Image (cartoon, rainbow, N blue to C red):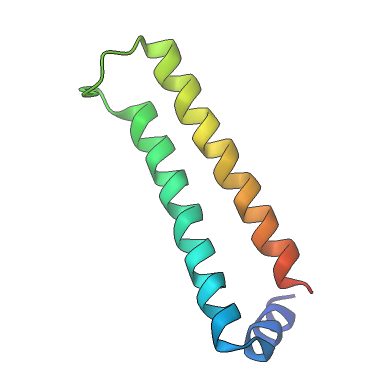
Length: 76
């Protein structure tokens, strides 16, 4: 499986590889931001904890969606 992914990456053009790296970067950004919002005790915005957790989970769900899109696009 990993060998197949690496072969697909090598076959991509420079532009496609750049977009892949950019997609992974934004996936990690949304994931870390969601975790940061959930677990930060001194959150700078006045939000109730339930809304803060819901917003963090929404960001993590969006990160998961982006991750699966990256995986599906990489299989092509």
